[in-house]
Image (cartoon, rainbow, N blue to C red):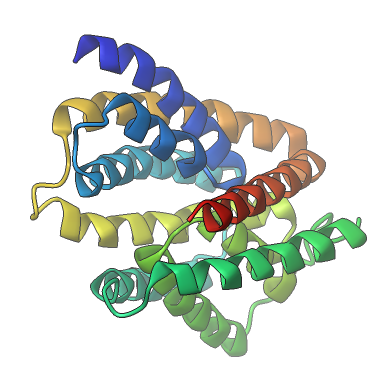
Length: 254
């Protein structure tokens, strides 16, 4: 177990760093868990990842909340809707083959990537406008849809949230990334409502990995706050390309 942790802790730290800035920590952590713990059942590895990720996400959310002005009147209802959506998504896993979902996600990520790339000013400045009741309804819809997606499939959740917050609420990338952490925290909690009662969390790995993830999240959020919108935007573009490449590879390989 000690040898496994020596390999897993740096991965958890790196995943926390990436996730705190633009999401996508699962791209590092999940393949690492499957490679290092091949004898464990997949559900237990996903549950272990969710607990460790939730610890890092919570840590990043707290740091952002202290430095970035967050629209709690919109974020809290959105997070609540995402919690419900994620729960429903997890319950619906058996209804639709994941192979049907992957091409749609690749297409949506590609649209986001091209749109962001062609608009250099996209997410550069925060409009700081007063959010309305209409924005609240939009937030609830975002929460339910993205929450359902995260519970059902997952890859790219943070990227989708950041893009939608910038596009629909006119946040800058930094504020959008900070807001995404609050919503993502809710979706992780909803998933753990399944994994923990089902005893699908390997606590001996999850807790140390969670602590490493917190350390990475603190570094990542500090870098994002220091680098500002330009840095976060670049990471967002890199992550989008990486996600698309991975999903295309998974589709071709099947």
